Amino acid sequence: AYGLLFLGAHFVWAFSLMFLFSGRGYWQELIESIIWAHNKLKVAPATQPRALSIIQGRAVGVTHYLLGGIATTWAFFLARIIAVG
Image 1 (cartoon, rainbow, N blue to C red):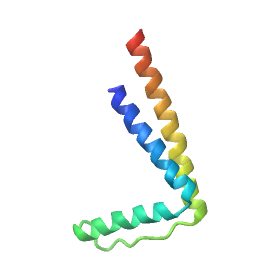
Image 2: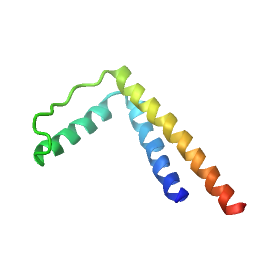
Image 3: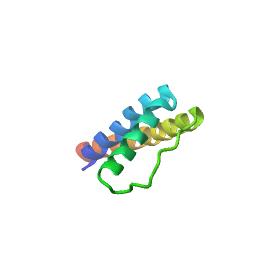
Image 4: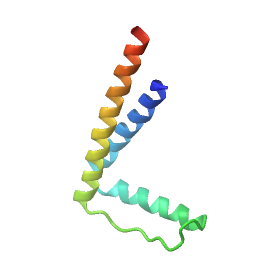
């Protein structure tokens, strides 16, 4: 279970680096892709994307980077303690 948590947290952590380094570009692309999928599937056809500022994009990147790093470290140490102990 902690192995899957580690993999998921590591994905969030690594994925956030792309957005952190790029500013808002990739986040905007991700948001537009999600909105497109919702419109295509008619889940939420009235939703329209809003542009992120560079500061907002970097704030989202930093948040995901920190939370992903904390969760990755936590899952690694818990799995290690359980395996060794």
